Image (cartoon, rainbow, N blue to C red; front, side):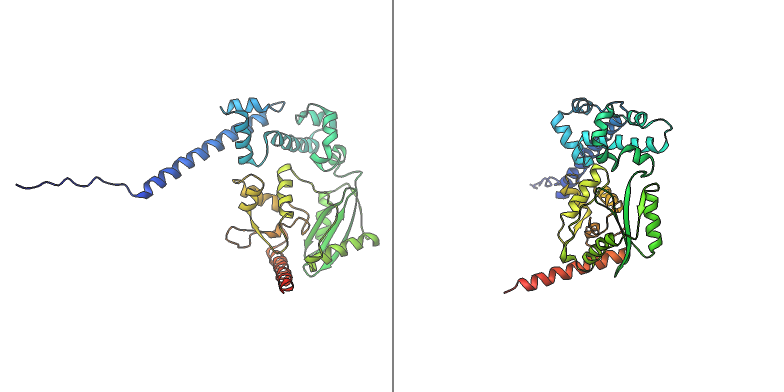
Length: 312
């Protein structure tokens, strides 16, 4: 009598479960991104900023959970996103509208002109009338010097250093500053101010001396969070764009971090040269990859020297 042995049941490879998990995770991430995108469109299309409860209800989430998801996806809270969006609209209105500044403020979605004026410097970097006039009324001192990295321009507003520009052509740097503030009163060749340029040049040549200067940092709320994270990277160290995104609580915003680095107008003071690709390779740098490499090499050498001196 023959014995029939049933075949062993088929067992799916272990990788099947992992692929399934990845697929579920991908679908969940896509759903979160879609919900947040819808919330962003609602914020942008509303005359007044929707409340957190309204946004959460649209996403079928609790306010607490929605707030956490929105910040994780965009790097901003819903309130900060609404403020940043209105700031962009205001900039467009001030640049294109024929009406009054007050009209532009209301067209941009600010419901209280008095509340706007309380925070206008944080939103625009200067008063609304100054912004519309291309910097009219603003006094900016500047000077151009030379360093081992080429030409350098340092500019200072009433609030602090507003530009540190690097390049090969000094005249081009001055034109860049004029483009940024076309109607500001630009004052150059001030002997006293040139001492400040010398201080910045000294920092470039020897990063270990530090740079303790007041800064006039102009950017969106997200950009400012990125720039602050960059300033927290010690000389001689680097971080990836993904690292910075994670540090500011926006782990999916690595590309936006790269864009914020590219928008930085304060070379070395806000050290975007310390941000590299995930594999450690050098990516684009507003002032040129060669300058980025040289700055990193100098800081690494300083770090090695400090470590050697610390040995018993």
